[in-house]
Length: 214
Image (cartoon, rainbow, N blue to C red; front, side, top):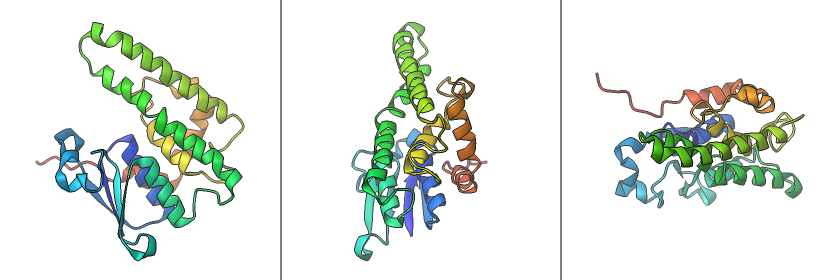
């Protein structure tokens, strides 16, 4: 059994999608980052950076529990554990590593800044940084659109990889990025293909917020 500590964010959704695609049993523990729960001492023990998601796999290597934090590391761990969505041959692995690092290093931090600056009320304070991060976000959508030209998936053939799961988590928020997928037809086709997968749909349906008290 895997304990998943997460919230309803792109990084949280990467992991619910991967767990569903891999068919692994898991329990969800909601960490409400809007209430500062990520700073709780108990969570700090498994996520030293006070960020979600994090997991505890009670059937880790050698049968002993192991905790893993950072969404990219979790995806790599789950792929290694199951032998799925990460090719075994080194040359075929490299594109998965590349596009996974592309996501965690850019296609996440940059649109995340768009999210943040859209919330700044003072137009003068937000105008320059918002223009900067919006431009970079659009550039990144262009990069992945070119990559997907003539391709079904980002880094592999025949089935998606953990890189697809990582990128999908953020493409899911394209409207909040102020991006229309119609401007990126290859991304749009890939997005529709990914979101049509039953396991992906289950991953996005997992409750990652607490129901409000009546």
